[in-house]
Length: 394
Ligand code: AMP
Image (cartoon, rainbow, N blue to C red; front, side, top):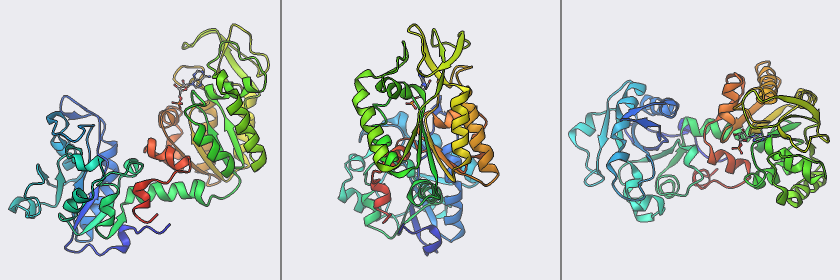
């Protein structure tokens, strides 16, 4: 990793163009979840502490290069000021922004209007990036969740100014590096969720990097079916059978053990509290669907975790939204949380429903790191280069 952190930058008296993700949910003009805002606070505080002046650059929604009043970042201003505990001066237009107004000079923190109002942003336009660069002295990217997009404020701008990672970006990159870059072995990956077809690149990359791959959720059904087992009326992508066999062959060649459910919880319908029973994975009745992994499978997973030093997790092991089909996800997540709390496991999780599933299990707090970056987290786990990280020199 060759990117710089805020510690290595001289920020005294400098304006720091800081790309953040404050794309928070808003209802009736009020922010309903401040998580993303809360997570940028350390970066802003550290820039201020080093004598720098943060000029925050962010997107909000998808205005597609046009001014859309409902997507103005102005509505985020009160929540941002509350979280930062200081006045934030809103800069409505880039016209004349290179000469700060008196108010802008007096303010601690500046916030630019939705950067996606400008067509040059998503086009990763060099001239637009140069114009942005003219507004400050240093570039700090704290938006890991936007790093899989090559946009002017996430990619091109990094080449116009001395650049560094913000604290949240730094934490994400360090966690991902610990999980997949240079992990302590053995490494176990847990991959669950609905479909194999949405996680092909992920599975393909993981079998080459991890020692054990636990496959759960609806996608495990596709693997079971590919081995000739009857999965009844379970969610299953029968047309992916060849792909599943290829993944298993690739795993075998790479020395990665694949752990499929040995027993499964089956029910007649996808509904909370549906009548259910646990059967061996080869004995799913024709008129039943698999909705969770059974107790024996959970015991195998927890045993694999006991022998591991690192865990990377994406996707639930069953239909976690509807009890009792959340049992395997809860049990495995709580076991991982316990091992992490005891300092025996480095556990990193993220992507899609995973954060919700681990929160529901009450396990999220004890995981070493939970990424809320969604698409960027998955692309990183797929082994792809993230333009926003590459531009920082990472
Ligand atoms: P994903 O977005 O791919 O991570 O998939 C998450 C979804 O997969 C959740 O909504 C789960 O309810 C669903 N899921 C997990 N296991 C099963 C299963 N055995 N049958 C049907 N849906 C499942």
